[in-house]
Image (cartoon, rainbow, N blue to C red; front, side, top):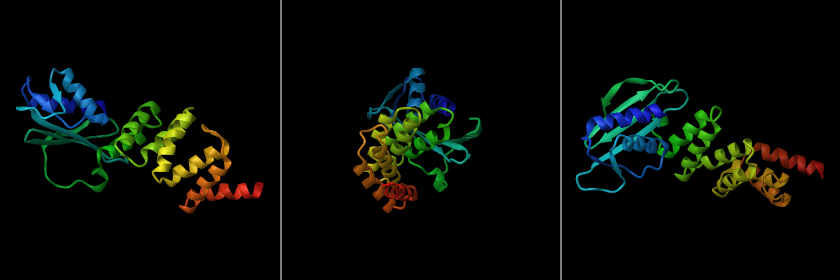
Length: 225
């Protein structure tokens, strides 16, 4: 990930004068923040507001997922470039190329929240802390699955109370899997005050939405009474 940001910042630096003011969108994603940090370390002034004489600058990481190459799209002023990287080793695939206005495959045409979520899933087993950071950013940008994934990862790492808070957000947003997890939490008092009645209601809601595991838990509950 860092090599993508380093290469992108290096290319921006090669395209503009050292005293240029770069205007970027609010750096609310990990890749964007990493590039901005690299540029500022090189002495560039980076602003999120329009400044007379400033150079509009945009950069986007499109992660193909499932072992495919990551692609960086870079726009500096009127110059549009792209290059791809092998996700397994971070090595660049060829040189920066002029951007062609052809559509990318659907699984690479993700918004920033989707990219961050995919990055979290990619490194979750190798670096849970970094994965959590990606999920937090993705959740803040509105990714529908990020709150659930973050909550599950927090619970798995011994932070049940924190995890339940994020799963509750996902449940309130209509995520049936989150209803199931939250229902179990209320049923067993995991990371939250035990409320069996509320737990069964959430499990019923998840079961009605097609979560088979919730149906099984409810069946065991009835059999155990």
